[in-house]
Image (cartoon, rainbow, N blue to C red; front, side):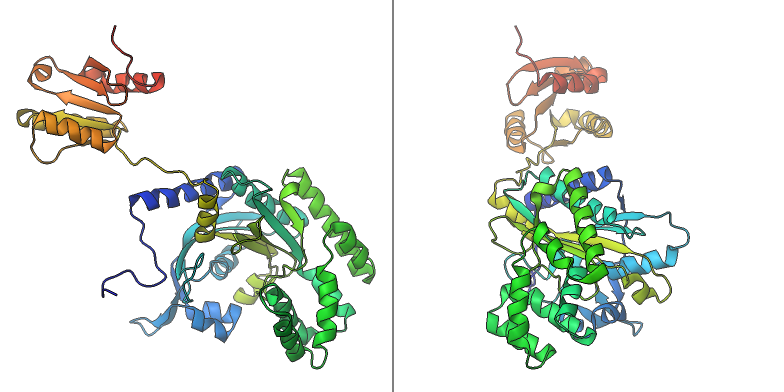
Length: 443
C-alpha cells in the first residue's frame, strides 16, 4: 500500500462517480420537499458523550474519536439522531409542530469495510417530531416508498418489512420475560436472522437463564405471523393494551394503503431494530430478492429526546437511507443513470481574438451556459478536435471575419449544421435552438 493511498473504508468520487452520487441527493431532496420536509445541517464533529449517553460505552469502539486541542473528547458523527434530538430540545418551545426535517450528510463508523458498508458513507435522514399518532409513521414510510419509486424501484424490486416493538413487548410479557431482560431478548431476536439457532438460544439463555430453548421456540412461532390478521388475532389475547395495539396496526396499514404504497409493505415481526431507543413501529427496506444488506431502516423513538436533553419529552420517528447499499441496488437493476459531464458550449478563436473570446465566454457563463475553450494556443483544426472531445453541444467560432461583423458562427456538433448570428443575439438564439432540438439543416 502506498502511504498516500485512500484509507481503508473511504471512497474517492471522481466526476463521473460524483455525478451519480449527486443524482441520489437530488432525488432525496426532490421527494422530501414534495412531502414538505425542510432541510437542515449540523456539525460533523460532536462531543463523544453524546453518543455514549445514547448507546452506551461499547459504542466507542465503533467510532472515530479523539481528544481535540482543547482537551475535549470528540467523535466524527456515526449517525444523526442524537444531534437532531439536541437541536430540537434546544428549540422545542419556538418550533411549530410537527417538525418535519431532513438531512443529507457524511457519517463515519470505525468498522471492518465490506460490500455495502464503509467507514465513511452518506446518509439521507428524515424525521417527524411532535406527532404521536400513526399518521406520522405512515407519512415517513410513504416518503421512503416514494423515494424508491422515484428511483424506478417497484414492489417487485424492494420490500419494506414492517414490525412493532410494542407488539413484541406485549408478547414478551405473555412469556413472563421481566423488564430487565427485555433489551437483551429483543437484541437476540433482532440478530436471529443473521445467526445460527444455537447462537440465538445462547443469547436468550444469557438474558433468561435456563429458558433459552423454550423462548426460542415461542419466538419462532411469533416470527411466523406473516400477515396482519394473524398479528391482530394474537394481540387480542393480550388484554386491553393488545386490543389497542391491534387497532393501531389496522390504522397504520389503512393509511399506507391510502398513501398508495401498500404493495411495497410486508408485515414481518422478525424486524426488531437492535437499537434500544425504538419504542413503536419499526421497519427496514430490502431488495425483494432478499439479497444484500438493508437499504433503509427506521421507526419511532418517542423518549430519546428527553433522554438526551433531560427536560424535553416529544414523540418522534424517523428513518435513514445509506448511499452505498442503495447505489449497489440501483446499479444491479440498471437504474443508476450515466451522466454526460460536458460543457454546453465550446468557444473556438484565434489568438488575436482571444480577449474578445474571453469576454464572450464570460457573457455566456453569466447567462447560465457552461462554456469552455482551449487554454493552450492552437490552430482552428486542433480546437475543433478539442470541441468534439469535450462533448459540447455547440461550437462557437470567432474568427477575423466574425469579429469584423460582430457575429459568430455556431456549429451544432451533433447534427453538423451551422448558422451565423450576431453576438448580441447569441444567447437568445441558443435558447431557441435548444427548444427546437438543435440547429436545423440549411436549405
